Image 1 (cartoon, one colour):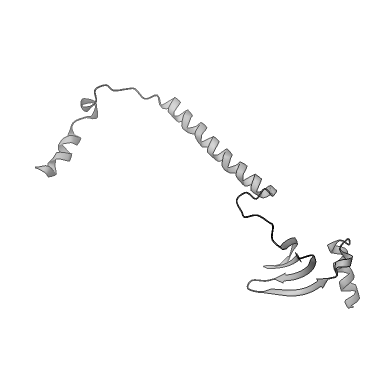
Image 2 (image 1 turned 135 degrees about the vertical axis):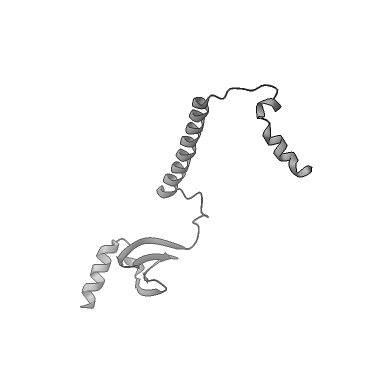
Length: 126
C-alpha cells in the first residue's frame, strides 16, 4: 500500500491541496529574471575589464624581484621575453617546453629603448 501512496497523491490536482491558489504573473516574473541576468552579466564584464586593465585583485601581489617588462611573439608558439631581475635586464626565448637565455643587457644603458638596444646588438654581431 505504501508503494501506491505517491501515485495516489499525484492523482489529485494541486489546487485541492492548497488553501488558496494565487495567479502568477509571468510578465513581471520574467522581467525580474531578465533584470537579474543583466546585473550578473554586467558584474562579470566589469570584473573582466578591471582584470584586463591591470587591476589584479584576483592574483597575488607583485612585490617580487622578477618583473616581465615586455613580451613579443616571433611566430608559432615562440616568444621573446624581456625580464628584469634585481635591476638587471635579461632577454629570454620562450618555446613550447623550453626557456632559453639569449642576452644579458648592460645596466648602464637602461634609458635606451628595447628596440634600439636589440638593433644595436644585432648590428654589432654582423
